Image (cartoon, rainbow, N blue to C red; front, side, top):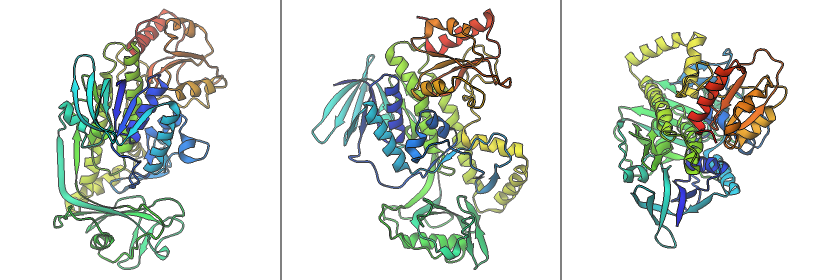
Length: 520
């Protein structure tokens, strides 16, 4: 059989990419080795820019079961150091507390509704690339077969078969100096503050915050309620300088209790959940920080953990991979449809690889700052002082959220919004926001004149087969721009404060050509 795009890996990243391609008019084939969705508990939420991106696609209500918008977190943490975000004028740390299993369910339902062909129990065993396509050898319950695909995307995790078969290097470091243990557990209500969720241990007189990495002489302990009212917490420990764990044997609940006792220096009366599972019980030795040399090699592309792996501290993995998918989808579709300008597909690597490098940097820094050593304590004390300044808290929050990104738009723009995420225009626009939201929800590029000037639409007439033009209106003089060109991933390819004159027309045409190809 043949396909335009084949995605290997049916986790959240692969499923979201499949949805993005279908919205752009491409029908991908998705292959997943597992016969059914994994029930093993993993990530328990999303935070940062990806939350706004999913909301842009209309996924907030399906994911949460309620209408409205994601709200920013009043507090967060960096390596266990508290970040008070309440005084930030533009808090970027929006959050959704949604288990990964629910995210996968919603995305698979959305993908099937859009017409994506999903084949479960189908495993890639080999690939062979030539000038025109990639030939895939697939093992399936009904027998082996081959697929000839124009492009192949590996969304198959840190041990990616696609990456290995394509010969893409995966350099980085392995830190095996610590072990982490995590499990679902019940903590006695008598030890928990009902107002704050803090854990109060009378002996040895210790009060610990939830949803943070509590650094203690014996290591680090973190705990967080899985779902409000469930009574079940995720409890995790990090220990350094302990005898190596035997990763060949399954972890037990007693092992989690013993680890918590060593970290705390006191007993924590944990008990296993009695409600139906599945429940997490997991041991990991060390962590990898690695990034692929290239996100693209010819007709093969990498997505999510196949392209980058890092510590899970702060939970950036799913946030990063899903933004990769939204960045890649429309560019790959443009290539399939034949209107992609030269080099468009290569901007997937040039835009997303630097973002991943920043995530690797900050997660390694957070892990280093948690080590129980006197010099690390001094560094934490200094950082605590620096975080008293709201400007520094804002910088750390933007780093964690991924909102400090500014893509190079590759043409002369000069406007401060170019390369940035779409600003929130809902409070500025009196007429036209619904149209903008509808078109971006459909993953369409949108040119918006915010002053009601039809000259902008007329100047873009030669691109209206690929770009939707909306004339919006506002009486608000504090508008961040007069006209904007929004890519399907929510980033601005161009912006101007002046919608009149030949110069505006020239720069707009340059941006349209750079990102959406030559005029029709």
